[in-house]
Length: 92
Image (cartoon, rainbow, N blue to C red):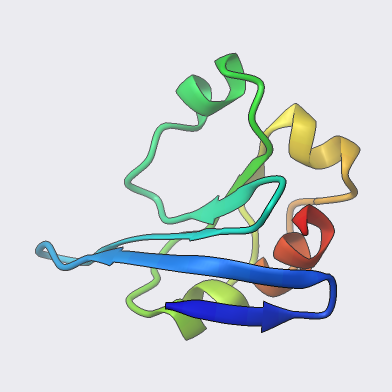
């Protein structure tokens, strides 16, 4: 599935596992991910990424607050506390 953002589009991925799905929304220059994924590994790869928690849908990811961001994402203007959608806009 794709979503439109003001700066472009992002691809949405959901793997239905219990107790909550694994969700990633990827823009051209980075992605927002759910709490399942390891920020330390992403940081070591030099990738722009931000994490949200407690999400069960793409809409949840877009509206959830960022709880962690890699240094590359922070250089793009992503910050803890902003909405997932706002982080993705900066990664387009």
